[in-house]
Amino acid sequence: MTNNVKEIKAIYYVQLRFEQVFKKMQDQAVLTLSNITTAVYDFGKWKAKESLTERIKQGNYTQQQIHFRDCADRETTQ
Image (cartoon, rainbow, N blue to C red; front, side, top):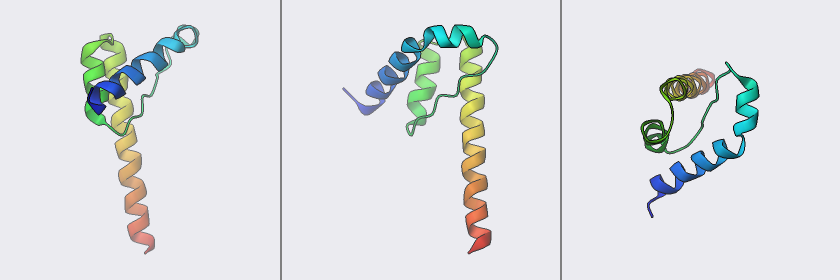
């Protein structure tokens, strides 16, 4: 089993475990973090509804922005 498949299963089971919490949150976004971006993308295609897929993409984009901002801050302070 590849790391990508393992990561997809981990994401799925974590979200399945917190299903009741997500239902109570209703319109709030769920941010799925992973060091394997392909796994998050594949998970979105594989199991998630369109709205969740969009939120995963938005969360991933936000994570990338924060990472880039953090890297830029480090460069300016050095």
